[in-house]
Length: 327
Image 1 (tube, rainbow, N blue to C red):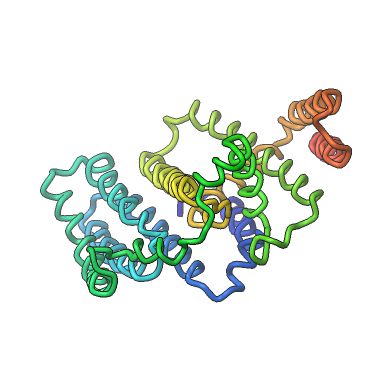
Image 2 (cartoon, rainbow, N blue to C red):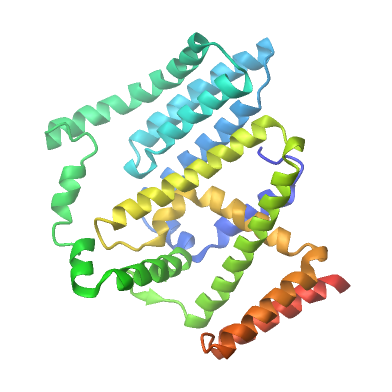
């Protein structure tokens, strides 16, 4: 829906989600995470379809139906998992972009669209919220107070900093978050082989480099993209930022460096990976990236910062990229 003339991106992003080891483990468990991800993905799809609509009467009627579907799906997300409540402001942003940026509608028309969306969403969520308030008291409609009681013995971030310092907290945050995003099983006690994490780090770095190259090229040719694609891209970016902010916020309270909490943004993450890897595999970038990888490996090795296995992996990756010129 977002990039209709690039079906390979859809396949690449889908493959990333399908074969992510930690995601496979989570979807094999009995929990509400998978349903929450499905609802959030549905909301993104409906939002992009809504943004793509034109201004004809038939498309306006279709837009109304999409707003109702968005409201119903948001209401279902309200009673599924509090971690995807960030979908609510996300859809409001989509409506605002559609009404006031893509169509330049009047305030009254924009409020009407918002009302059509809010009515089913609030109607589905309200009984659950009233139940929580009656059960937990103190207007705790999300049960957050009860959550704090349940995890009373859990290690808090302030305690960890007092014992080990901020530097150790930052190191553990990045290292454990990376490992547990890709695969750290059991109760965070079953790790993959260290060499696998090293290979995944190289692949991740290539994806980030490639995405940065792609983003720069798109920005230089930004006039060629339709406005609805910019609006849809904004939604994906905001979702990623929301997920990151909520993850950091939770870890400021408790030591919970579990990368799986970022799976609510798995669609934009998978798209970044697909775009990044596609970009680094472009033939015209083969020699440049190969030289950068090889040069970086030599510098890090001479500085004593690179073990032998990552060095070998970087050399293999550089050779593979260079071979693209001859395929």
